[in-house]
Amino acid sequence: MSSQREDKTTELWTRDEWSIYRNALPLQPNRIDITRLEGDFAYALIDSLLKGRVFEMMADPPFPIAQELQSLYFEARASERGRGNQPFGLGFPLFLTKDEQGEAIAAPLFIWNLSIEPSPRHIGRWPISRKPFQPLSFNRFLTTYWDQSAGAGLTARFDAALASGSIDAGMLVKLCNEASEMLSLEQVSQGIAVANAPTLGELGRLIQQPQVHWSGILGLYRPHQHLFIAPAQKDREEESGPPPAHTLGLLPLDPFQSTALNTVFKQETTLVTGLAGAGRTHLALHLLSNALSNGQRCLVVAPRLPALRQIQQRLEQLGFGRLSFLLRDTAQDLPLFTEIIRASANAKEPELSYSQDEYRLLVARAERLKRKLDDNYLSTRAFVFGPYNWTETVGLYLKSIRKEGKELLATQLNTQDYRFSYQEYEQLGQAITSCQGLLSDENVLRSPLNNLHQGIFLRMEKEEALPFIEEKTKALLERALKLRQWYINRVGTYSELLSGHYEQYYQEHARRLALLNDRIGESYGRFGEAFEVSGLGALKLKRVFSGNAKA
Image (cartoon, rainbow, N blue to C red):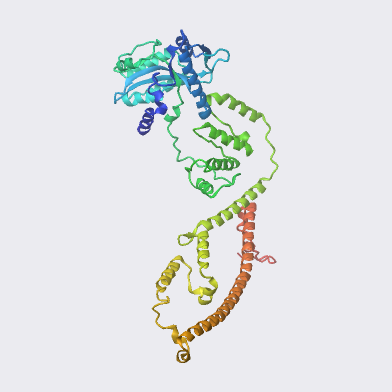
């Protein structure tokens, strides 16, 4: 294991989540010294564990200890429902020392996984049992700490001891003595003697000299071995598998999920994040349906069991129930998984009633339709007019047309004189803004009174001329506006009819072109690469009716 990874796991050792692997003394809740149970229960428990027996022992502790066992039981059940693993176990023996900062370490050396249930007949009694599938492990936090501090390869030594078989009394003593010798402890030769867990006052004296203390602590020991597994290194020479035949799935996706899906197919590793309810599980189900339809194997990992259970239920609703298996605990679920594999091997495979060629053509057609729909959506989201997409550009146009219709503007301007770019739009806006002062009602270069007949000023008084001018101006203006509106409407109607006429032929041509492309794609998928080079140009008939053909 690399030095960087060792430092990271050592840092995890100091967190509350894994604190029981650093200090298991019953000074905190949900930790019980086995010597506090009644009679010789502690000795009988240690003896049964070291002999590798499958057993069930009835604990009848005093009432305060029974309450603590009850709390341990409910915490273990809650952890099993949430994480899939039952963490109740026994840590034995303890290694007592202090770290560089002077903090006490009372770390369990070995952890035996056990089961605890309330007695169905007697209140206050608790059967504690060990089943054949329940594992034995050692504290890898502690052995890694040893390897870092003393340079001893104790982790590998303990791994080899577990691989050789069960740990009996002789092997346990041998491993403890070897660790004491490699760590240069004064307590080198020792034997098993179950002792009480040290109190807080005794702990300060005992940690002055590092030692193995033969105390056992019942508690919740969550699996931690996965923290010490180095990430697998991909072999550069390893050939990547074939690309997926298609990118389709069974569930509809929103635009954000679709974007994440496209990224998954383009990159080797993709991290998709989001708040609760954002649709990550929905996307995972879509990916699973795609991978399974492409014949790939899938592994879904989650820190919480309900998330995996939800995915399994949705897979059953989609018809993939028989292809999935919910693995909660490797040792506990192994018999059930073996039975399922055996039953699947003996079961008759369902007959496939479809043509592979037709399925391949259907998938290719669906892929083309998906790309067409994706392109249509992306075209509405792309920037087509400066910082505005298509929808925003239409909104900008509708906002402007509410102020003044386009009919009058179309009669004054020629569309061929403009590029219709965003830079040109900004330039026109700046020009219009700068001209507003010149075209206002004030400070004009020529007075509109010069357009009036001189007789109005010579023969009429001011009080008589003003109403006359306003009346005539209003009448002439109304006639001019009607004429202009009639002209604009006629020109606009003709322009729209002409555009619609040409648009009809353009759409028909585009439809035929799209249909031709689809037929070419289907024919290419049906006949393969030979279809690409086929055609009239590929048929070369040389002097069919003559025997003297020349190359």
